[in-house]
Length: 72
Image (cartoon, rainbow, N blue to C red; front, side):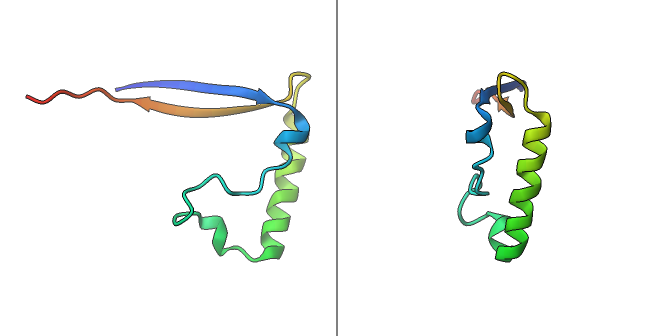
């Protein structure tokens, strides 16, 4: 197995538009939050994104696992 960190920059305005919908629809734990809790989470997220953004924008990083197998 090989791991590789991948990512890209998004401009700050795009990054602040996160809506919590990046999970599989049946397994999204954010669906259990009240609208008030979700609003608070989004506000905290936007504040953190603004604090960590660079001139290039907000860095979106994700870890990928590349697995190779063979039948024996």
